Image (cartoon, rainbow, N blue to C red):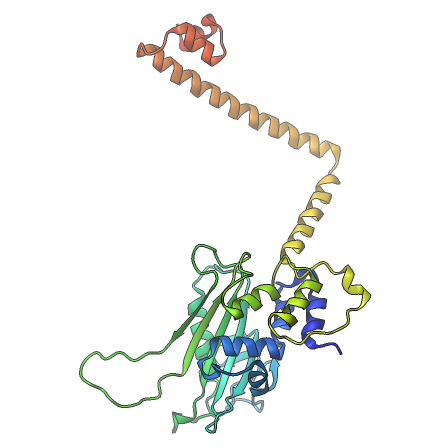
Length: 338
């Protein structure tokens, strides 16, 4: 039997870090279960199977438009958040889960895959915004303006690929609402824990991590591991069910590699350059030669000026200066204006 994750790995091929394929890989219930047990405190101590069984319905990955509950008839998770006057955004993956405790708790979970760690703004702020949208969308679905107690906690979990090795890489950080006593002794047990943003930071080099979740995601999205090796590791090291048999086409698949895709693009660019006419090549070569010559002349002129200063300061005699400049004494004196 083939599993969803196995098919996802094969179909992703060299484009694993492209948006559509990353979503397909991360949508697998067992992968999501690993993310839940590795980041969500309500799922600490759960097995992968227990966590997977808690996921309600099929996680949404499409861009199906959904209006807020009071504006339309679609209820449940969706990947597009539309609020009048605020425009719309599209989530990568959104789903709901119920804990298996006697008092079952419902959570809204958003999982985002981010290839660029520095998109021009702080990713945490975007995570907070996504979480806030998931909270506001619950109006008239989980709670009403007359009773906010029905509101459900939300998690916005960000998988940041290619994080800088010297700072964020190989780390998981949670940002959540915490009370702080400013004055007095406030002892009420308020329900404030309603939004958490979790940043899972990977890097190109983070494959062997002491953290099981980071290790699993790093291997799953690795730019270096061949397909067969990746499947073997997912099953044997991380307990993710994979297909037992491989079709002959698998041998033709290189790996889940964004890097190889980039290399293929570079090869295509080189091929395009090779097809440029000889006339254009000659033109660019002349421009390059002129630029190099001008740069060399500038360097030589600067060297002569420095040597001239040393001569004028009586730190170097003319013959030695001329020798270092690669000129005859008369040529050096002429360049010096003597």
